[in-house]
Image: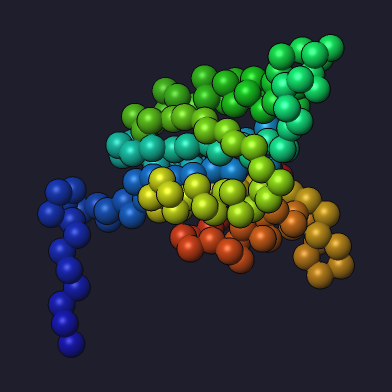
Length: 159
């Protein structure tokens, strides 16, 4: 039998925080807000990074938006909802809080790829959706990301 490694040499009496970089799937919904707040709570007072990641629909080229505002309403909603939540939780953690957006048709794949690319330790997502008979209230994006992710996934609901 081998002795357990001593992880507490820097913080005597406390367990180490295994998560330094947390990625949160963000769409501005109540469940994604709950997921973001959970990620900040997990990070606590430790330094690190909490990144909200929003996958926007593959938008047509800008020429198609000649008569439309520069930013589609759905994108504006994602950005403004993030800023309001960021303002509310920023004082609760010394962690770096940021938002990254990308456009893709494959939301779960984009989230999982970005998590690996950025070296995230944990993926936190809202679990909202209509998963049907077998997966009630588990959205198809949350389920696909949980299955495909190479890092631990925490699914959160806003109840």
